[in-house]
Image 1 (cartoon, rainbow, N blue to C red):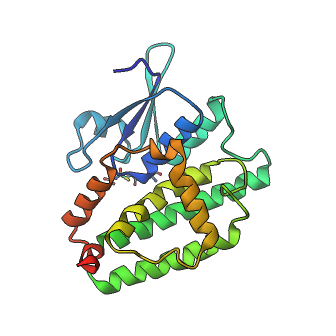
Image 2 (cartoon, rainbow, N blue to C red; image 1 turned 60 degrees about the horizontal axis):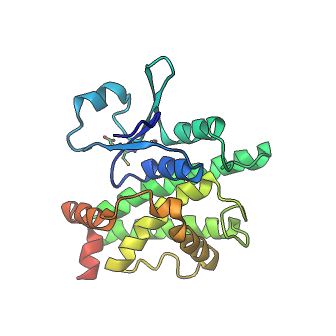
Length: 227
Ligand SMILES: N[C@@H](CCC(=O)N[C@@H](CS)C(=O)NCC(=O)O)C(=O)O
C-alpha cells in the first residue's frame, strides 16, 4: 500500500473512474487505486458512497481524517482546482463552460453505450448504433485540426471521450460497428487518445477480457453479430 494522500475507489470497467485516473495521470499526481466488486458492494464502500457508485476519491487530510468525494465531474474539478501541472480546463470562462457541455455530451453517449452493450436483439443494437452515429456526427462537426478536442492541449473532454473510444476498440475486434467510418476527425482523435500514456494506463491489462466477459454475461447481441 502506498502513502498516497489520494485514493481512487475504482471498478475495472468503469469509464467514469477512468476520467479521474486520466486526470490524475495527466497532472502527474501520485495516487492509490482500490477496486470494488460492484456486484457485491462491500459494507465499507456503501458506508462512504452516497449513491453506491464509483468513482470515489478519498482525500487524506493533514489532521488524519478522510474526506470522500463522489461523482466523476466533481472529482475532476477538484483535481483541477487543487493540483499543479497542466491545466485540463481552458482559462476562458466561455470555453470552459462549453467544455463542460461536451463532458455532459460524453456522459449521454455513455448511457447509449450501456444500452448498446446490453442489447439482446438486433433492434435494440441498431437503435443505439444509430444514436452513436448521430452523436459522433455532432462531435465531428465540433472538432478542429486536433490532435485533441480543443487543439494542442489535452483537456478533461479528452479524458471523458478516451474511455468511450476504448469500448469501441474492443467492440471492433468482435464485430466492427462502423460508427466512425465516415468520421475522419473523430477517427484521428480516437487514435491519438488511444496512444496517450495516461489513457493506456487508466485500465488494467485485462480490460478487454473483462469487457468481453461482461458482454457474455449480458448475452449481448454484439457477440451474436460476430457469429
Ligand atoms: N454520474 C456518475 C456515474 C458513475 C457510475 O455510473 N458508476 C457506475 C460504474 S461505471 C457504478 O458505480 N454503478 C454501480 C451502481 O449503480 O450500482 C459519475 O460521473 O461518477
